[in-house]
Length: 89
Image (cartoon, rainbow, N blue to C red; front, side, top):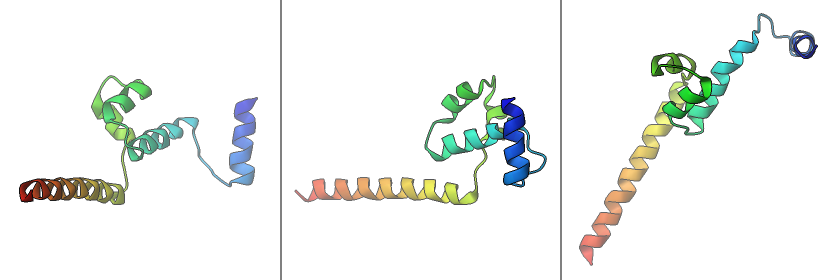
């Protein structure tokens, strides 16, 4: 009964066709990666035996990769600035 109601909302209101409940696994995994959850934890939450399978579900848009590189850059820049201040004292 719940599945029929869910499918009705998808098709009648949201106009989504060919949706499978299983599709939500990709969304779940991607949202976890975007939130910063490590891939091993995501693997465990999805119940996968291998990281290879998890990586199929946890793909991201290129913009999230750029964001991650920027975070690393900021961290390294901050660390470098901190070390320079210590050397000046």
